[in-house]
Image (cartoon, rainbow over all chains, first blue to last red; front, top):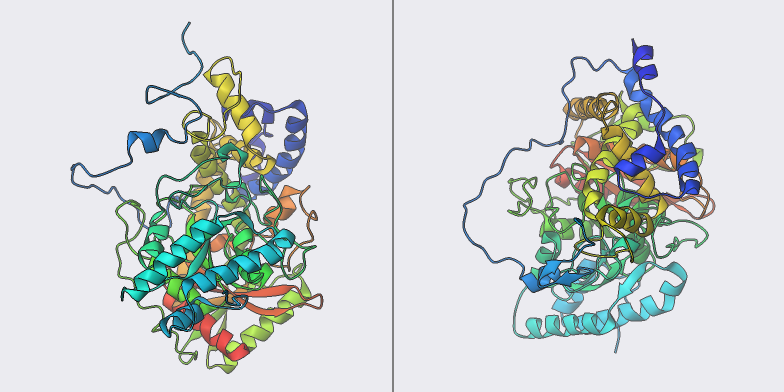
Length: 101
Length: 479
């Protein structure tokens, strides 16, 4: 059973995953990361040796629940403060390259 | 006039200022002297603003003269460059955040500030707190002050090196998989990772949100108790901070271990660890027994799966958290991109260093379609098993004693080519983050080369009083 699970997990395709993550890597980076991450993935696969069928997943170690607050206006950062770190702005808005022709 | 602050603790600084034997300005000037003298060799700081620090100190001195009180009035604190301090840079040691200036204080920082703390500078780290050596900084490599051929540990290596090197009185770090405890152990200072939810994460640039915690790095356990007491407690701005009362951590430092039952997890004393480290840690355990503790053997059977679980969960969360760095709203942006996708891809490629890229790729992979169940979901299930291991042992004992790391500090460059070997060094620290419990690193000796070893005290969630009491009793008996 464990073997089946292991073989269904393929090798990481670094070039494809980097594209998903919007990281434009060089060919050399892809080669280096491929070798390093193949090792890491082969190692972390180890968890599938365990029988996890009846185990609940933990997303947070302490109980986390929705938190609501009153919908009241409170002081926040000014527009000027929010925009102060932006690489390019125009009329208090973030400027980016053209999206639509 | 300045004051010699090389070995000064927070509580010593406070009592000197209370007795009017020195001013905050004298302490800050002494600290700036130390930084000028040693930081060229250690490279702990990314930024020190001397004028600003002196002005903050003068304000603290005026406040004291007017009779104002503050638990940290005039005490300088160094801050890891991943926690927001209003008006100071916050680069996360990443080129992608070069030039970023924080518009607000992190809650932990705001609480220290409201008690009068002075913020002297920003300490180096592994980029976005991803690393165990501080070699992954986008700007410079911090050296271990005990021997500058060695790493200080990471990711809060700048904070630990500053404290150990006498160029900070105390510092803040963050701990996602050991990043406070490991550098504290490698540099020979005290490092506390509080329970998840004990200190608000608001204003901490997120790496892995379900694991991150802010913690103090200090010269003694008393200082860790002082800083924890000031920062801890529920915060409206962090919905994962927990609404339970903050005890008086100082009051619990009794100096003995009577009626304490301490567990030795057998999985933390394993073949392959440095025998000298094991010997030094076992001697510390014997000292705890001499102080009145009963020592029992316990087992945490899922420990061998902890590194795998951690590197799946942490990188998954990192890949989501670091999606915000795309060159649109802050930080670095590549010039001449043809469209937004081109801009994101090239900005991120040029802005992030190799370790951050590796972790984003691994995290994106374990969350991607077809792999989610085998990696991410399975890791969350193993996390449940690891959490239960701790719940079980804390029914048998008050706290656990273990090494912080299987080795002493590595030589600079020793492990940089092999990420997996680097990750395996985190085996004894990642478990506390996965389980949400608290952990303390206390210096317990040095090896033949003079490199420090840390004793790790692990306690149940919100059991900081216990581990501080144990750390303090051990420390008092060994100095």
